[in-house]
Every structure is written in structure tokens, then in C-alpha cells.
Image (cartoon, rainbow, N blue to C red; front, side, top):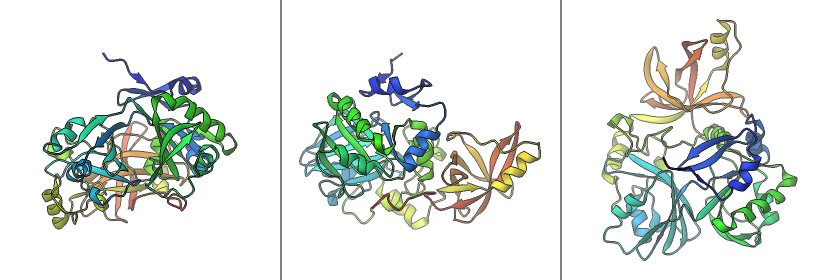
Length: 398
């Protein structure tokens, strides 16, 4: 049995994790929550700033004359058109147009890129690099990463960075220094709020953490675990691999696979880009014929939920964290989909879910029901399909 690795921030996070609430993430041990409840960490994301250790993300450096061609071939994004300093979110597919994984591509230089992924991607990168002049290196265990999220995140970085970040645009990156350590800062994140991700060598991790914590003291900066981030990412309509979709490499049957169009990533599929890319023909066919499924938002009707619980003499029982469980979604008694993640939204004061729904019921405004368990009995709460995201503040991209 392999021992879980610790991120370079562990000497700090382990002392702050009061409930010893730990989670596994890609072979690493990370904090689930620092407090017994998620309230303080969640509201830091939405009202102030939260500091999240995201080091376990898989990270690959792709370098060489054909680096852009490799990523252009492997993903549906137009990588050849990316500018130095630009970041692009993307999924990548097999030949049938089914998602293998998703992550970000950062163009660090004309011939150097960083790819992040949730699952190991070295073999897939190497398979697609045949015949290309390119070098691929995994740097997961060399590059540490922190996510600084929330409306006060920019002010905190301006306080402790060598160079001002005010002009850093959405999905762009810059080289900078924190605590005199070289870092790369990208305006990206997984919460749907104003936010940044900070990339550094392992050896500089603790110095950068300490400087950020010190700079953020006057702004309400709070270390945040992945459970509060989970609630925020659902509000932002952001999905998670092996929770909201199954990687084709892990799927047992075709029905478990999803395409970018089904996951709401049609905007990232550049069918007008030049040349071949993996899955192109299948995705062109799906664009012509339409998708049978779509990931949508569900808002559960509170009055209807209240009535279900009132029938057994109880107030509504809502989980205090995001629930990663499949819950059947029905229309007129027939199952037409399933919710993959559901959560109470403290900000919106709504019970919400990410759900896969069949055509034609995935259109906004469709009235459906979602299964809930009331005093050990399966009931069906009324729900409405809504467009994603549930929440997107105006300052996110400004």
C-alpha cells in the first residue's frame, strides 16, 4: 500500500486543520476543512479571500518546436492561436469524441506550455506526440500551487507581489515574485469568483504561503479546504471528473461516457480551427445532429421540499456540504436524467444541483423532480432546469 504524499504546504496546513479532516487527492493528503463546519471557509471565498492548496493537480511541461502542434492535435482548442501569457481551459477526447479529462493549457513561451489535468496524462501526451519534435516532462512533484480566491484576492496580491496584478486579465498569466521567490500567477480558479492561482517551485512554498497569510490578515484571508471549494464550484456550474462525468479510460460501458457538448463545453470546441484533432469527426457529427444529453443546473423548489418533510413532521434536512451522489431526475414519473452533485447554496439560499438531463427536458424552464430521501423514504422534490452558472459575480472577469 502506497503512503499518501504530503504537499510542501503540509507543515502549515496540518497545524491549522483543527478537526483533522483530511481527504485524498491524486495520491496526496489535503485538507477537507480547517474547521468543524464549512461556514467560515465558504464565506471567505464569497466575501473576502480563501487560500487553497491545489498542488495535487497533475502538471506537465511541453517544450520544443512542435509543442503547440501537439496540444493543438490533442485538444479541441485552437492552441496555435494562443498568445504567450494566455491560459485556455479545455477538455480532451478519444476518437469517439468522449472526454478523457479536462484542465488548463498555459502558454509560457512560444515553444513552452504547461498542461494541468486531474488524471495522469503522460501516456496520452506521448502517444499523440509521435513524429513531433517535442519534450514532455511531468512536474507535479516539483511545482507547488495555491489558489487565492475571493473578491479581496487582488488587493492581497498587490500588497505582497513585486509587480502589481491590477492589469492581469481573466485567463492570463504573468511572472512575479512573492517573498522574493519567483512565481507565476494566473488569473484562474475553481470557485467562479475573482481569483488567482500561484505556481512555484516546492522549495519556495512555505515562504510564499507565509507571505500571503501575512498580507491577507487585514482582508479576512482564511485557509480553505476542498469541501468549501466544492460548494463554490457547484454554484459556479463547474464540474468534476469522476463525479460529474466519467473519464473514458475509466468507463465500463458507452453510457458512462460524455462529450464536451454534453458537458456544456461547446464553446471550447473549435471546429473551425485548421487541421486534425482527436475526436474531430465525432464532434462535427454531434454538432450537426445535436446532443442527446446535457449537463444543466437544477433548482429544487423549497416549498415543495418543505411539504415533503412536513408530511412526516420534520423541517427540511439539508446537508451542510456538497453531496457527490447520483440522484434520479424524473419527468411525469419517468426517469430522464440524474443529478451528480447537489448542495445547499448559502449565498443564493437555494438547494441546487448539477444534473445530466436527456433531450428535450434539458431546456431551461423544464419542470422536473429530483429524488430526495425523507425519513428513509424515497420522495421526489419538484425542480426547475436553469442555465449555468447559478452564480457569477460581476467582478469575476473585471
